[in-house]
Image (tube, rainbow, N blue to C red; front, side, top):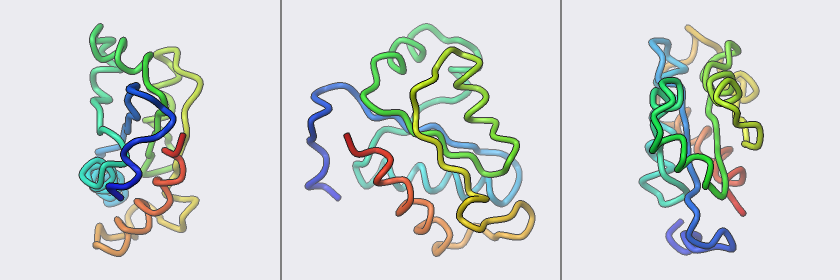
Length: 125
């Protein structure tokens, strides 16, 4: 992954916002976002800061080259939080689209790898 750190995005960050809800799929979304960040695909960023309209977080998000929203369940809290804050241009990854069902998908490494693999192409400039 390290060979993909530099791209046509320039210096603008690629940000990852994830569900970190209480359900199993929330844990998967959170852990996948952390893995994407660790692997250099983007920077995990604070969804609570978006919800609270924290000025620095809002400004950094406005300047992002790419934004990835990872939602654990079909409630789409990440997507809705970004939209309510005025963000319309972002990639969205819904774990249900990957066959993961709330309450029935344990946060095992295989699930996290599956989400990470689906997220990487969404962060490419």
